[in-house]
Image (tube, rainbow, N blue to C red; front, side, top):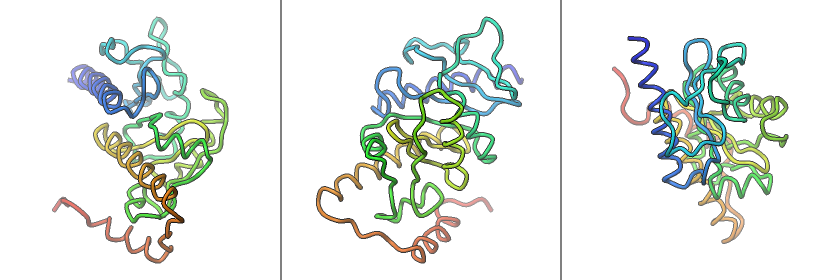
Length: 217
C-alpha cells in the first residue's frame, strides 16, 4: 500500500508541474514542485522537461537532505523546499513559480501589501518578500524560512514566488492566487496609488477566513 501511495504521489507531482507549466506560472523547466513524504520529501528533478517526466524521475530527499545513489539529481532549489517543510509544519506540498507578475514585483523588491482583502489568503496582511541570495544556496533557503514563518506564500527577491499547501492542489491553487493578486497590484500601481487596508481590517478578514467556505462538521 505504501508503494502504491508513493507512486500516486510521484505522479501527482508531475501532474502539478505540468499544470503549472500549461498555465504559464513557470516557463520551460523553471520552477519546481515537491511534496512531503515520510521523513523527507519528493521533488522534481533538475533540468528535465515536465512533459518527459515519469514517476521514477521524481527524487526522494530524506530528512538529512540526502538522495539515493543513482537517483536523478533533485531540483537545484531543493534546499528552500526543505526549509519550507521545517518551518511550516502544516505544509505537505510546495510549488515554486516564476510567474510573470509575481516575478516582476519580486525584481522590484516589492511585497504585495493589503491593497485587496484577498492578500489574507497567504495568512497575514501582506505577501512578504524573501531577501535575495544566489539560487540553490542554503542562504536563500534561510531567507525563505524567515519569510514563510508566519505566511503560506512569499515572493523571492529577483527570483519568483513560493506557495505552500496542505496538498498539491492547495499549493498550486495558492500559487495561482498569488499571481492573480500580483497582476492586480501591478495594474493598480499603474493606475495610481493603491489604498492599503489597515491592520484592524485585515485582522477582521483573517478571522472571517477561518470560517470561510466548506467547513468540516
